[in-house]
Length: 392
Image (cartoon, rainbow, N blue to C red):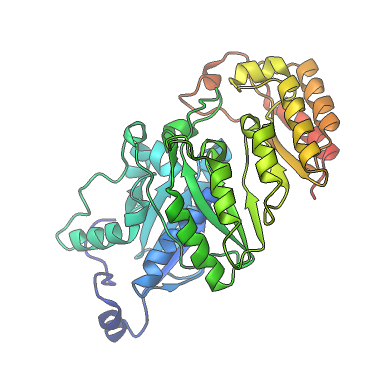
């Protein structure tokens, strides 16, 4: 919104309290994955360290930050709804759109005068300073002029974030990796998040040690493509990081986020089985149980290799809990291919399946296909799969 605001957010904590009789309030809302939640926690930590009080997103705040998602059309819609809700909550507040939807929908969001500031998938470590500079610039009649949504294809460095407070007081989520190089035909993430970038081990260890000192006993390692952690490092990968975390005092359990089948091998599992703190829940991404569909998706495995990975995994961890993701209604998916997926999922005996109805993402290969599946058929297949694997 243009013009000078009634509330001067440029004031420091004490001056603000003296002028308005209260502290500055920031409220956040997260859409999407665990990586997004971690990033929101890190952004909120920036404001808390500057003296802001954390408020309820459903109530009054001076600054509203929505960490958006664009993995499906529904995620886009929810992102827009939450941004509109923030503006309605306080017409004089500052509304900030952060993350994947802000990255992909920059032009349309810039035309939305209910949104004050866009921050894409870089500069999340600078959200507080960007807000401060934007507020200062508003005093001169217009907002911040620097580029806050950058080209993700040019990003090569991991942006280090740090949390001082997390929403989940039982398990602390720690982001260790960003980006993806897989380019599955349905997925927009390589374009919104960029290529694989890994967090330095010493940074991960420092944060986990800090969390353990705060009383957290469990951590969950999160990443956009966690299996690619350490790809840029010389001979250091995810298993090496896990071995170091196994020695952190105070921790009782280390969990892994979603994994790709390519990570699972005998050497990896042999080292993993020796760790005392590793919790054997494997969320092993499948997406389809049809080889023809997997090929169209540009997945890097077939059902035979996936079956072998699961057998290795269960041999190393007989007590393992195995869950997965499956997309129904992918372009060209026939009734026979869906039947293969249902049968394969039952054969794998997943404890739970997260079912997603295929959602076209503009700019992806799959979205341009002519053999899109009818929405009603997607709903029907989704319901069949959900009934076969009810919620845990």
